[in-house]
Length: 413
Image 1 (cartoon, rainbow, N blue to C red):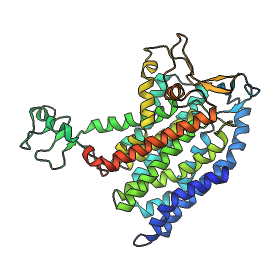
Image 2: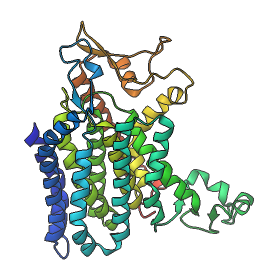
Image 3: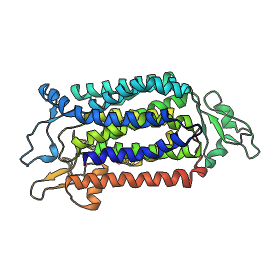
Image 4: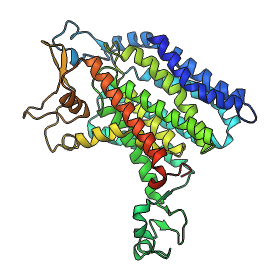
């Protein structure tokens, strides 16, 4: 399985390498920047995890697999917070690649540096969460703090395209501005006779970037609890984004933003696949909140600086759905236990729906899938959830490329 994961990742990069080699003029340097960091990321992560795991165990950073209660392995100590390894490897390789990335794409200098600081900050905060176990109110603030470097150097547009269905709010049928547009002009600027329905939301766009960072990090964190799910969903999302980038490069659309995304996601996907080798059922390591924050902020960074944040949200539909399902518990409308993961049934060896003290089902997408599909083994449950993620990614592509024109998508904004 482990060599196959590396081979699978290299195959996903072949279209990008082919594009770099056949572009005019051909760029072997770009091809190298795609393949070499990803290969090294996989190998460094794969061989570093056992070494780092021993140190984490000595520091009493371990957990017990709650999903194995009632089994002979329920008291086995599993090293925690191994997300620090792919995160550190990613930062190291990006630092080493920076001179070449900047020389080939000078316009990406600020986005690359701000992304490096943002991810570094979030990785540090995620590791402190694994050590100190921050309460949820603090966890909501951590991504907002880490997004400061991202927001402070953002030089892109703060304009968005108004949905065709909402143009009546800002423009009259003749193309003039409505009274509402005039009243909110200090906060939102609509342009008269705009052929593209463009509105400048100004400082609200910076708020949106911060909220996106908060959502991506915490959405991975709350959609977790079974072996391989955190890493698996992140790999599917990263693969979907890379596929979108390949399509954009082939069409010559948003080339700079797509190359930026590829430079960051290639090593991320490779290191995540290496981590998956150890986190897959039965897990030898736990990824911890460190990895959830790391992966979430990577998606926020590439979505914002790569100028495809709307498309990114399409690939996060299961995470959005899980968040919506979880709202009653997250906001304490109904009781919310510390752990909401499925319950292991010793007699059958299957995972079943977990319930609250009041008898109600814990409100997660994982439990909904179990309710619909019935009890199943943990490894099978992970595969089903990842297939759901793949299915929603396919739906995202259908919306983006099938009905995107009517949904106001423009990847340059």
